[in-house]
Image (tube, rainbow, N blue to C red; front, side, top):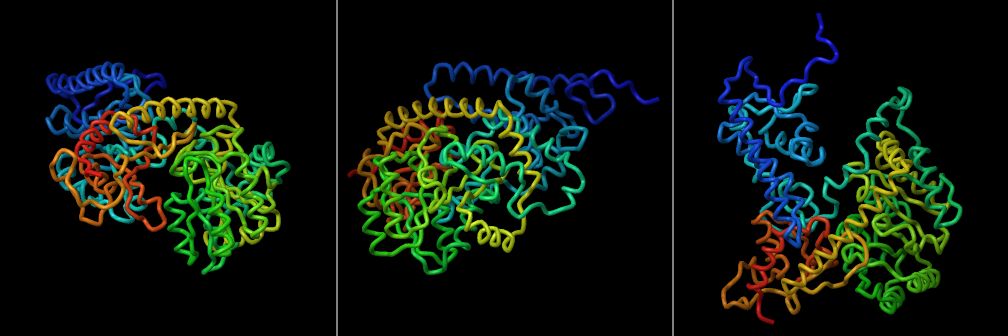
Length: 535
């Protein structure tokens, strides 16, 4: 006879053997009690520390499991509490536990069995796993930010990354939306979908964009695998190899690489805390006769500044005089607020194409974005999309549509903006405390850029305390030297070099305020400040 549907819940720890001895069970409970005590101590420290350490939660849980396995407190075959049980027991989010468990499975400390849960991996299999370090670059090279930042282990403090802490994303109910999206009728799974993308999401976006751009038809929107994919469509659909294009400098490092991959010639226009250098923009447009301007109006990467309305009018007038396409990267708008100025809003999607996505707000793995463009460009861009990869994932697009249609999504965005504002204030104060000067102090967005005054350029002098630092070579920038030392200590920084077209040496960094609010980073920067080269 099958067990009743409401059978008693099994104990949180279920050894693989039929009858585990009491001593082993006590040991298994002890490690969890020790972890709870560590979390309590951490909470007490955070209450008296200016910079909080939320990113440590995943590392703390992962480390506790690994230590318990290494000491024998958790034996091979032991089943751990479910994600929900563990989260309830520790008082943390389910997303935090799921992230820790996923990392432990990847390192073969745990094994995941569908429908059964997470189990301690056998020592024989664990001994065969490759050292973690083999998968991680130990050098901050020219392409490190693009090739290695995304591949780092979850226990790395990603102070220079481009996404929110994973625990923040847990609040938007994306998992439920994804489950609902997979329950679509069979005929949808058996087709590639529409070339422009899922109509339901395009209609939602048309309504939202119409509030600030004027009338927008759903057929003016092409769904993509994120903003990077949208850039690809624009580069291949509107531009030709050899064309010059204007970009902001400092600016988005991956856009620079993309342009060069397509044989385009990026020309840097200075962007400062005051906005885009419009006089330089005029001179460079006259000298180089570019075909397009790539620009971030709101939440610029890396400065996080937003252009003023007066500047946007001048940009559009210049684009008209020089017959430029204007490609507006709008990925950070939701982190700023719905009332920030918009080039596409002023232009009405005539000369301006606006690109957006949801990796910053819904989840990085969703890989859904869009291009909103003039009607005449829909067919050329859709043709490129189909030629290079056919349609985009309707399941992901349906999940994004469900999240956006949820009345709670706006409240979620408001909470994210509030948390970023709180973190930004603390991070800026902490950076000032270690002698760093912000390049700009933004009112919103994900980043703050800062460096030590007079620290730009190559290393060739002794440190301020009279000792020699840890150079990478005389031509290496100070920012890269510091980033190299940080990586050795489990901290991933983003040197300013990466955001310059020629990657020339700098002495500043891009800090993600949601991740940089961590005492490990502050302690590291305090030590580095004492070893600065003399001006």
